[in-house]
Image 1 (cartoon, rainbow, N blue to C red):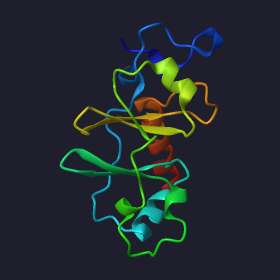
Image 2 (tube, one colour):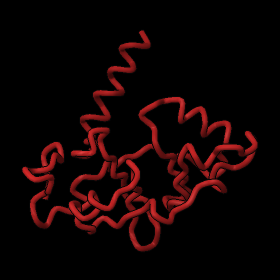
Image 3 (cartoon, rainbow, N blue to C red):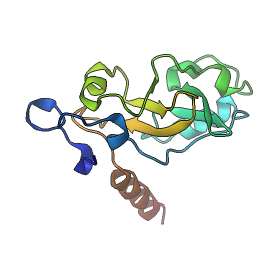
Image 4 (cartoon, rainbow, N blue to C red):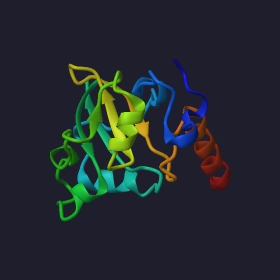
Length: 147
């Protein structure tokens, strides 16, 4: 099932049977394990980035958020500051239940072996999820502004 623009229906719920896989971004940006804290801060300079996904050979090692980096030495590996607990979800999880339980704005989507499948990105309004089209539009806007 694909949910157009993944906006909630009336009452803030999605159609029954809608899963995290229906709403996730399938090609999230990732960083390698050797990414340093200083490099992670550079990535977070973009206000749209809320989580750094550290991946090796397709397996998610850590989800790093800004707060994880506070006070860390710039040359330290960012992967050591991140965690998975509370920051990952399976693709078959019910989207509405996941949305209601989310405390942050991002959840990495992984299979049982830890392979990164995607990223669930809650919009600022907290009423829907970012789509690939949303991400592409922001990138095009930034490219236009850079000219």
